[in-house]
Image (cartoon, rainbow, N blue to C red; front, side):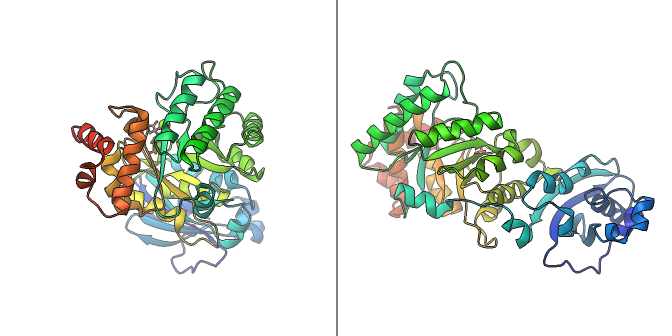
Length: 408
Ligand code: CAP
Ligand code: MG
């Protein structure tokens, strides 16, 4: 069977097929042959004598059922995959195919997992509803910050900065993606001291507060750290899902901790950024949702990272569109954010998201407390339908923030 034999434009996908949408640019061969090559290499691969002999193998081969310009749709029989095994699924549809010499550019732009496969994973334990119930916040975006500087703070300073952010009005304080248990700020001490500050801020503000602890580490160690957070009254854990890998993420989710799972996507742009090669962030978002994260970074379109408004919209869609009863995942806007951007963010996200600012809070001229207050003020202004500039006339912290960041 040649690559072209994997093309069947009359094929009507079955309910149980997994469907992938690729952007395909061939090198010196016809597009349909290249498309067939992607189907072959991401399913049963090279045709052998045995494949001819054994009809049940032939039935397994993937089929190119649509070619529209460089957009190619491929249907994969569900029997090709092991249920409940995300690395297995991605090793097929997002594996060797990116390196084929016959393909100059290849991007996996979307994936549809059939119900049976989706049901074989845990899915989100809490989702948007569970996060809002925990924090007791129903009708506004959640306000979060990342402790800055990213690395270097000693444990007591880290906890102090966290306290100030909560006291100023942050609902959420998180570790940065590259803070784990370095000598200057070791894991257990950090968790204990920062949770103590959380409790203090809760009793002083009367608001529920959460600490997103970065448990990213070798898998066994990560499980031990998540257990430590749970045992010490934590409510959240954060995992760098791409540097840890899909296996580790599944292991952590499948352990069923009573912790909300925040997913950081550090490293994603290495394969999500190019429009004609790699893996669309939407695919990453769907895989993470099916496995069961409760929150995920999706870009901002207005901050320091590269995504466009359309891309951010698609990422939000992957987390919130109906998917066989799976809970919706809370989108996280982060990266170069400050109070002045809140109106545009609400325009892009609606109210179901986390506005997360690191430098945009700790870089406030009057410090962290004022920085957190300024973001809460911006959120209140937008929810009440008042222009930021007008609201700032009565709110000093916001006014200072607008002057600071509008100056760029
Ligand atoms: C933001 C951040 C986040 C990025 C991740 C940073 O800090 O902590 O990791 O937002 O990118 O380290 O840059 P600032 P994304 O608020 O100070 O910019 O959300 O696109 O995955
Ligand atoms: Mg960060």
